[in-house]
Length: 407
Image 1: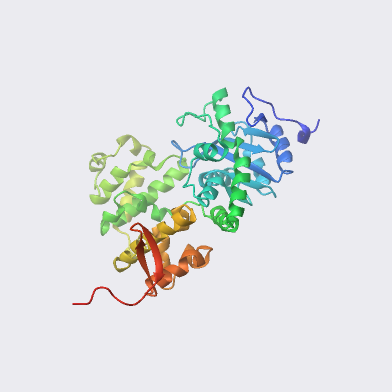
Image 2: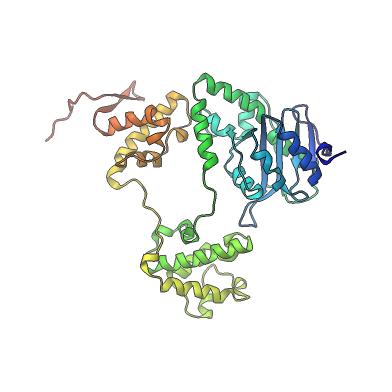
């Protein structure tokens, strides 16, 4: 029997949707599965991953469902990169809350799927606000998913039957959800809208931001001033690079508290460095202390032109009342349309659109005619908002007749 004809083994787990559940633990089995999946028109995917002790998310299990079966792929025993042809193939990839799964797939397989359908995002277009997989399965299919331990260690082997059942359940109903959601989107004439959002999600950059921007993630970054910013930028960049090299969380290299303490009051000696609040002296061994001092020195001598500052919020003080007014109407409009308000427009979307010239998602997507043009008329003074029935905001033609006279 050739490699492409061999079938993956079955673990001792209960079938989901009446389908066989295959446990793929060899490259030969994976190649056979890839051969099957290249011939299907759609398949569901989910990932279990860990990142508590690594810089990059580490795949612990890859689950796949198609019309005839479910497969659980063990990345500790197979080269998951061999799955890439499936992702690059013609089949539609169905996921739930896809963003992190796409990140893991891109890092593990080197590609993201060519075409995706995100059931969580699709649900937002029919009025279900960012539902969990459990809630959407219960709401649309009338089924209860088996609850798993959210703290389970997916890196531990062997996986237990309960873990395998739970993992299979995460993909067991994706194809059914896709059918129901697609039908509902077609009924509402919103499938094109959803497809546009899926394409944006797929194309989103998941590369690591420049290390010079790492200090922006500090809790009190915007409170830093002058030289503090320079030192924070240099140390955070050093910390980020070291964390990537070692594949460990940045906190394992240097805590945020220690970084901010050093930025506020840079130490000038090893004794002062060891007394920095939040610094574990054990991290300073093997030349790390010297490298940290080099980063501090770089920050202190940094040319101001090399300081990488976070972009200012797109809303200036003068525009905030307009954004607040428009946001109230957008929330009302989302309720009328039965669309998750965060899909229709966020406050950041509104702020970008109110710039001159308009920018962002409202300027050139399906949102433009739906809410973009009415917003331009409102802020341009050609329309006004009124309360109808004491609760409902209505956008109306402006009469131009003020009710309150100027003093």
